[in-house]
Amino acid sequence: MAVEGGRDLWVGFDLGGTKMLAQVYDSQYKILGKDRRKTRSSDKAESGLDRVALTIRTAMEVAQVDPSRLAGIGIGCPGPVDMDRGIVLNPPNLGWDDVNVRKRLEAEFNCPVAVINDVDAGVYGEYRRGAAQGARCAVGVFPGTGIGGGCVYQGEIFRGRNSSCLELGHIPMVPNGPLCGCGQRGCLEAIASRTAIAAQVARAVLRGDAPALAKSVGADVEKIRSGDLAASIQAGDHVVEEIVYDAARSLGAGVAAIVNLLCPDVVVMGGGLVEAMPEIFVDYLQKVARKRVMTSYRRSFSVVAAQLQDDAGATGAAAWVRHVVQGD
Image (cartoon, rainbow, N blue to C red; front, side, top):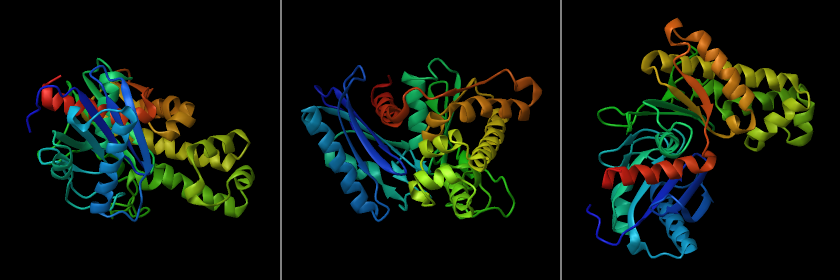
């Protein structure tokens, strides 16, 4: 879809596992307005897209700008995405299946829409505006509800022929291991995502092995957040510390596998676990990864924390649709 003259604003949308965030940007990536809502597990595709459209319109109202100024909308969605057609294929943690997001939003807002994987959006945001600027090959790993992976290679999002790729969370790690949301067993995210960590920690609480966490949060998996885990470790819950370090070791092994395949110059770690415990999910993870890669690769890469934090996905989505439309 062509862009008419006078359109000078971009919307970046991050449709993550627990939240949706819309931000309106000017040409210098200044945020003019935003709106944030929780995702609903009960949302089907149609109602979910209604909420996406409402969030974008609310963000534009906050920015006090008219939708006629929109030059493009970029949206990052969890799971595999057909980037050419703008279709979300079958995300394990969203519950949509072959949903044409681009068609719906282009009809709604009368501007170009680019649909990409949400972690690809985050990595692209870090490449354009954050911790991976100037990288030839940047890989991003975002542990959270699941474990997302993405890659930007020479300024382009790395992808397969028909869809996004680098589903790092679904690398098989443990034969006949825990059931994953994708339907397979023993995937990396089934043993090392925040959700997996919280499930293990909740069992420790019920056994009486994590008294500090029991007092502060309890054994409700949905209430155990990254900050709670960090506070529990600080308070002396050694079992929680062991569980978290085990997860970081598994993530380090996954990062080592990606380094052996792609030889990136930077690996960007993002998400709540990284923000709450960078000494574990950046520093320690880098040590693990360097021990597990081929000898010649051990000093070829660095592991760094994301700089844009919650803005990474929305910023990257906006930057990507601008790249698609204008070649910037």
